[in-house]
Image (cartoon, rainbow, N blue to C red; front, side, top):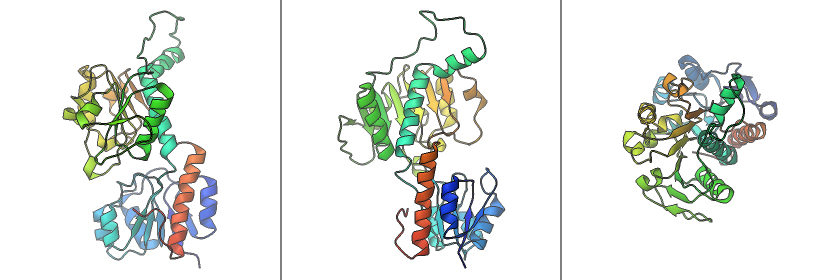
Amino acid sequence: MKPRLLITRKLPYRVVEAAQARFDVMLRDDHHPLSASELRQALRDFDVVLPTLGDRFQADVFADVPAPRARLLANFGVGFNHIDAMAARAAGVEVTNTPGAVTDATADIALTLILSTARRAGEGERLLRAGRWEGWGPTQLLGTHVTGRSVGIIGMGRIGKAIAQRCHFGFGMPVRFFNRSAVTPDFPAAQVDFGTAMAADFVVVAVPGGPATRHLIDAKALAHMQKTGFFINISRGDVVDEAALIAALQAGQIAGAGLDVYEHEPVVPSALMAMENVTLLPHLGTAALEVREAMGMMAVDNLIAHLEGRPLPNRV
């Protein structure tokens, strides 16, 4: 008899097919995260679970299921702050993730946000689609030139480095970065203090989520930015104090923002949606078929390693 696997959200067909070859798969037909009762049922009724963003396996869930049947949460995604890994491990449940597969796609979205926000692309498209474009003019929708401007990267891990490389080699942008540990990139980039990184022309946040980085970007952090600076977030929504960001934008303290993630997804504050100098994407960071397939196959590899008693390739 095959072990029972719960896949909590619809995944690409190739991933589901690979999982079905080794597991008795229940594929949940709902795009919303697991409810409180479903979280507990998942631990009780399945041998392994493939969860993803929003499936909040927190300490209270494990407290309610102290002897879970499930022995692995093979998370679909590199970020796993929705899973309390320490509580899981204390309950005898391992946790894995899918690093590496998401790096380039997420870095590409960061550049999309930089360009779209600086060059007012969203505002221009809305103007055109509304039938209000009256033709080219020398002063129409003047934006900010990106090439040669400085970029400050907050968090110089895989994704931070990929963003910095694109900025340096693609747009000739001087790169400065803040990272908790020393990093030596193989391209020109200066490791600086937090305030100096925040004072760049473009600031991109690429830190992991979790308690250690919650509201890392608050009013005090935003105060380091220039009035002409643009803020970009492709990390996790709760890394940013959204109220502080809104206040900074409304006060003209910074020039604009580009966001792919939000503090209370899928809720996006109406104040942000009302601002023309803010580019808003619906968490598109890894939304390319080949990337999602690679993420899924990595999660399946973790599941199979667990099934075969081998070391987990991506244990967190």
